[in-house]
Length: 117
Image (cartoon, rainbow, N blue to C red; front, side, top):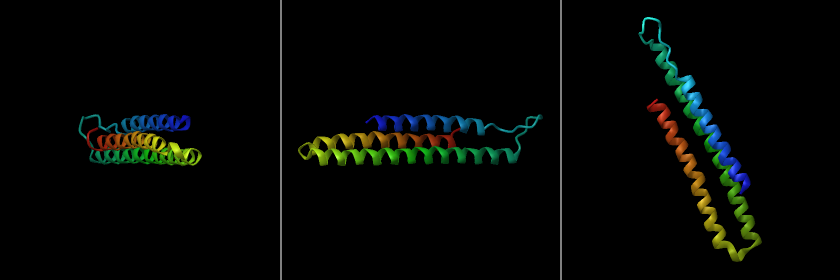
């Protein structure tokens, strides 16, 4: 369980770093006269897309690792104590739901970065 907590914390930290990079990349390039350059709009859109891709890629990879470790430990626990298979399986499902929820939150944040910011 300690390694799952570590992976979830690591995923959260990477998500926050990706969000901060989206704000850094998304600064608009405005000339001194106040008009917006067309190339600046494309650059901002490109950086937002890159930031969203980084968010989804890192969080999905971290979530996949966390899910694999969870399933691995569950199978090990069921092999050691077959009589507790139902309780172990229920705890595993709950853990997988929490991991998947973190991945879905990352997807929502990536969509917000692309379309709202």
